[in-house]
Length: 289
Picture 1 (spheres, rainbow, N blue to C red):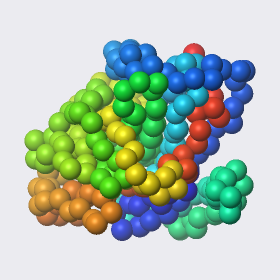
Picture 2 (tube, rainbow, N blue to C red):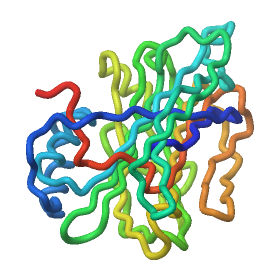
Picture 3 (cartoon, rainbow, N blue to C red):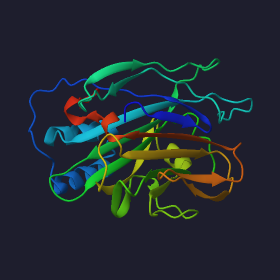
Picture 4 (cartoon, rainbow, N blue to C red):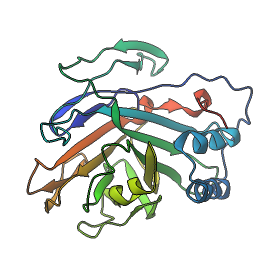
């Protein structure tokens, strides 16, 4: 998802990171569904990071896509993170030419607001894998920075991925990573969305530095093309137990959880068409094990 806008509450921008292939020749085929499920189980049991998990997929298949986004936040006067400040970062965007090819890079540069001196605090990571049998797999990983989460008490965070159901079908129920699961306050599944909670405070108490979890679901395209089908993801962090007031759904499938207060949470979200994601044959683990 290369050039999608990231929004923190009402602020939108650009953010992406690409990896250049340094691997030798790989099997030119698809991962099997059983191989994929085995790797996902190992990821959870062995606490693999996203890079390790993706590198294992890359060893078995070139048929997956991926994209990561980084969000920066600034701390408010009482030490809480501001819900309205983020950095817009430069991004390389692949523009389809008149023949439908997408191999012409064009530089897009975001604007950098003032008074941002924090490192990235949240990363949204997407992986779209297409096994040789069964359904396609959409994985939304939320990666969080420990120092400012470890003092959070109580409230669960929320993660949502949503689609236009004219473009895709969900198949089956979501799968969750560590410290994540089906939320009680809102439905875990709906016509156009899949929701998860994340016990960020308890996760931080057991972790050092960056920690992450995920929500995943089988998904299949039913119409449109890679240039029109769009996936939305949304991560909401709460530092107070502000109550959920409902959910909203746009005409194109974007789903958003709404709250009675917007001063005790921040929201990071992004979306893109499939063509904006990086191909798996360009993937290399930047920290190989």
